[in-house]
Amino acid sequence: MFSIMEEYDKIGIVLLNYNNSTLDTLECVNALIKSGCAQEQIFILDNDSEKKYKDILIKHIPGKVVMSFNPVNSGFAKGCNIGIKYFLNRENISYILLLNNDTIVPVNFLKDLITPFLHLDPTVGIVSPLIYYNTDKNQVWYGGVNYIPSIGCYTHNTDKNKIPINGYVDTNVTTGCCMLFRKTLIEKVGFLDEDYFMYFEDVDFSLKVRRAGFRILLNVDAHIFHKVGTSSEKVSFEKTQYAFKSYKLFIRKNYSSFKRLFYMVMAYIAYIHGGIKLILNRRTGESIIIFKVLFQSICK
Image (cartoon, rainbow, N blue to C red):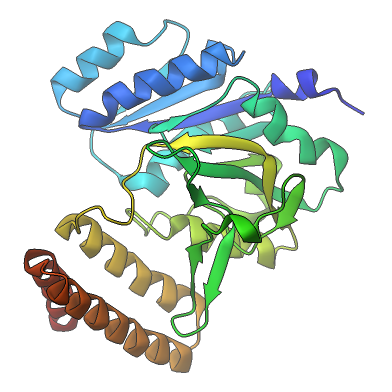
């Protein structure tokens, strides 16, 4: 049986950086190092940021942190895969952690997160922590998922009453915000699907992992904080467009023809309902974004 300290030193951490998220990246890296993580365990892929943001990284990131600069913005899945491939070739690395750069990790985070791999059977595929909003450290952003049968997809569980006080709980899918897995998992299920530019690559990967017979766990004993907007955040055209495009791709890749048709009809209804609610709440500009995305989707 390996000790937590022995295994803790075998985690390779993949962070993606893009433009004005650079300051978040610096804060995340510093928090990881303060938690006891060696600089060499951290890999940063810059996804074709503007020169001024690259210069900030080069100037302020500690010297032994590994950095790579992508000549194009290849999206989340492909960016993560570049980092994963880097660590696959490192014999001293046994685990890979995909971590959003806009997260803050507590001191003992990695030691807490890795524990299920040491105490449970080899069917454990992915472990993710409980994730709180950084703006409200009592509000859960990710605590497992809820399945929505009408659209064949999942939403984050944010209800504390549905989350155990401690320990581990199985969940259907996890979030790319933070997922830890053995690097041997990649040999068995493959990389993240690079057809997804942004959104749903984590859900698609989760389903592949479960279909291969592995478990996905929420580790309540480990937690991080995510610098993400709350539900009151304004609707963004770009994010809505990517989310809907990726959802359509996810449905096409994972369901039969009949289910694809049913789920897409239900998704359009849900989006229309959401757009109407925005109008009623006097958020007309945001409702226009919803309907514009739907219109473009129908025309393509």
